[in-house]
Image (cartoon, rainbow, N blue to C red; front, side, top):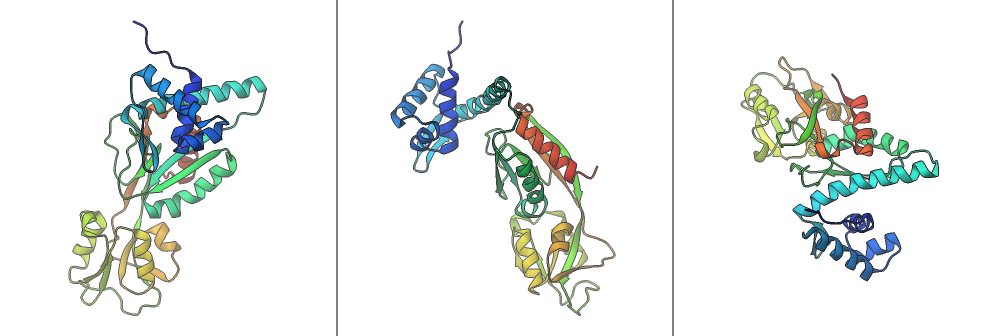
Length: 289
């Protein structure tokens, strides 16, 4: 049996629609007409016997089948671009889009300097950093590279432990009331109830059982800012706490528990050159093996 016949030109149009979101924007990007783009997309879907994109009020979004085709099309694009550069005798350069997901504070304080360096090294790669408390799906290509505080459990994900993150207890600079005993009279800034099982929350309950919870939030940056305003004590990742003006670390007999940070990406993207380059730079700059 013969499989479906797929033209690279149709896949190129498909990639443009995915990236631009609408037929009109994709047509302008490729210098073609909108009706032509629509016809070629329908021809591609007909040849595969699958609906690849769904139209929404905000533009096109990938179906599950479209996400699979998208993975393969991007790898084909990498090969085509490399082939074209080789024929032209030009210096190889990385191109395309990379979506990264992490927590808000980790993206701002840990990843931003590395991503800035990567952008200077590879100016033709567009980086998208998505900070979200949800775990975005690598299989559905909601992101290509993810950073999490727990190991990846999804099948077909390549992952590694990147670093061990130390945490500390912080208080507003110049506060004269020391943290002693069981926390009587102290106020706390802690994670919201959805994250109540996190190790630092349990540590606070155990270490300062009589302290009053003054504020809850799922954002560490908010914790740091409120701590600087004198709202209460906060457990923060050391890179965030040490960099925040107006707060200082409290010496504790037992320090808050540290956490591992893991990075992961789908195994189908192992040969994606721009992803490999970013992972190598992140590991070089942040890993503390």
